Image (cartoon, rainbow, N blue to C red; front, side, top):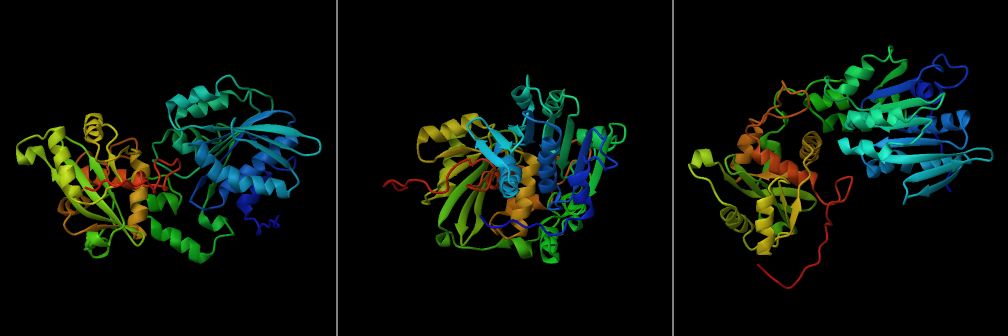
Length: 424
């Protein structure tokens, strides 16, 4: 195994690593909270410190590592952590079927259970356990019920809580209940910036700064808990993001759909060319403007017209459009994939792909271009949410990007599909 070396730790990273030690002024704190910019070096230090603390304080005990999903937890925490522990002389047994990792040394062995806190139902997964400590990776993405249930399991004397996250809306429950009241709750609170991670070069920092704009820049680069306001995509401009391309140059095709009867419906045909996805053309129907509503069958006919003679690998559909998805399935021409519908995460993905040139809009998509100039945040919303207007092409683009093959935490569908001899 290659030798693992750390660069010099920053002052904040050293505090995370040592806050529970006997000579630390923070040893009697019940919890630690680390928030701030992306890639600021807080997660690896926290997870390593969590494991070392558990061996210093306990033996033959149970702990919990929590993420939004099991797969994101493994990617962000477990995968980088286990080689470090092995290099330090720990024995590690990862029992994937039970989502438990047994870690030991010559004298002590402890168990670390993995949990995903993606929705309100997740709280039931952790009920009934007795834990000596719990670490929450990206706690701001978890429902309050799950976090509080996990904390309630820590009934052993000397147990502690470990939280890390990137900032969200300033009205978020974790910000108001924990960060703003950290002293009252006997928590050590550390705010990280990218400069607190010595392993990042200036070039990498500049690259991350180029990926975000607006509220997401303030959150992920400056580490601020700020409300989203103004245009959702303020950086979008036709000179940079609008092009013309022949569909004949594309190697793969998908269609994304935002379904509506009273509200507008928006479909987009996407083609992959040399690593970039192009929104080649679209169908957009606003019943209030046109003066008539369309049936599922009529929408299906428009879907076929949009596809033309192209082999479309799948149609990604608004997950609430059950009747339309069933109509498509019964016809047998297209494979249907229900879209992922996390709004804030989807908007972040669209922003990133636009900024990195991985998606482009073709000039015939006039309604898409119109909506990019009108799509705004709802500043009155408690959560990050855009206004429910001028959002239908924006929604179908978000569905496409969020459900891209191989681009999400949990694979939704495979990029390569078996082809048959039927041609359309």
